[in-house]
Length: 223
Ligand code: 5RP
Image 1 (cartoon, rainbow, N blue to C red):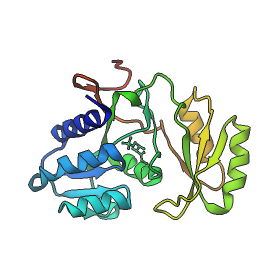
Image 2: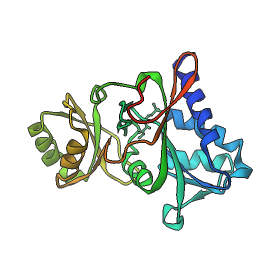
Image 3: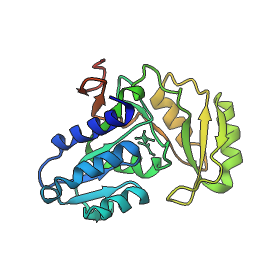
Image 4: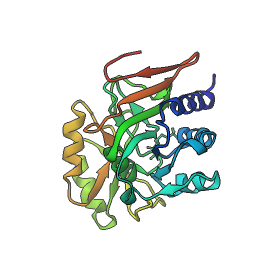
């Protein structure tokens, strides 16, 4: 299986985990694109979706899946999303597609977070993938200087604006040993909206596609 086939296999496997007549939280990215396509096949069996980005909303609506506002939803039983990296504790780096803030809000609100990924995303240590941080525009340089103090090398994602009207700094060369502490520390810098570390609220399940099959993993259950 190539990487696209693996992404599709993980995404399709997530359909089995959707409770009947539920509202489904939907992430963003190429793996989620396959998930949205699979979700359309069970359209009569779900009530609708809560979306983490304009791109996912457009795709969901194009396939006739009702998109609801998170504010109008009392309970979100499940959230399905990809990751840029995921470790053995199911902590993640997310935000490669720039949707990290809305993704983090939906992850927080959801009862179960299912990460769908191909095997290239599964790592023993987070940080090879640059950590995205969503930043209020006027704070860009200040936040960058604070990140340098933490040992990271910030790179401004030029020409990119998030769905919330903010900027992204991609942080290279961070030594991520204590992911929860680092997530809190970065989130406390004034001007940071949120960082793409999902450690305080990791995934509950990982559907990891390998060359031969899709494995369902929980935290610290190594392949
Ligand atoms: C978007 C994300 C995505 O989940 C992450 O970038 C993975 O994307 P892909 O499925 O395209 O590899 O966090 O903000």
